[in-house]
Amino acid sequence: MRLDRFLSETTPLTRSLAKRALKSGEVELNGQPIKQAATQIDPENDSVRWQGEPLALVGLRYVMLNKPLEVECSARRGLYPRAVDLIDLPKAERLKPVGRLDVDTTGLLLLTDDGQWAHRITSPKHRCAKVYRATLASPLEGTAAQRAKEQVAEGLLLDGEEEPTKPATLKLLSSTEAELTITEGRYHQVKRMFGALGNRVESLHRASIGDLVLDANLPPGEWRELTADEIALF
Ligand code: URA
Image 1 (tube, rainbow, N blue to C red):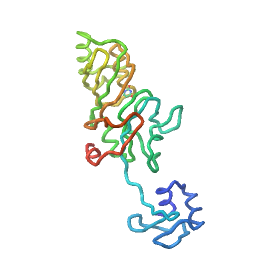
Image 2 (image 1 turned 30 degrees about the vertical axis):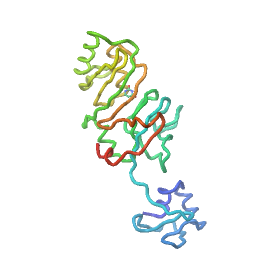
Image 3 (image 1 turned 135 degrees about the vertical axis):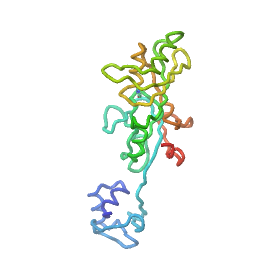
Image 4 (image 1 turned 60 degrees about the vertical axis):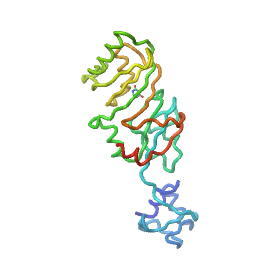
């Protein structure tokens, strides 16, 4: 790898600032000052220091965030802070949310720079189950509740779509607290499913993805890296 690229991957420096740092003698390669940006290095075996600090490439990262309200999952800066802005890791902007939660949805959001791992979670082929807790505007009880469970299990036709939703599971925790498990990730899917049932979601929280449950010790807005066992779930 070129030395200036290695510096831009392992420090906050951009490629051109890395070149400047090299020119001004801030970089050492295997104990010797070095100025040539085009020098090829072996990141595994060469020792590079910037301002005396040893540098190493960051590996793949896997993070769970308890997404709070009014945080966006998009890559571009918009009206609200982005999920990635809450993650205090070097080069955090390289982390991508695994699927999206709406700005007013809370709960389990995964972020990673491992595209293949993310794909195993989001690809419809893998049918990864996601559990959402919804507070409903209208109470769902009695035969209406039973009918709603059957409709969800059979599949619902959402506004503007031709394919019904894949079989899903609706559990009622109370007349206005529902737990919906889906294996797809269509646009605003949970809210639209309750809309198709003639109801409205007032608040929405994602509790789990596959066998990975949101850590109960993470308050809203807090994050932690996944353990090796958690990464291996997908
Ligand atoms: N379904 C929704 O409607 N919103 C979300 O944020 C996630 C799933």
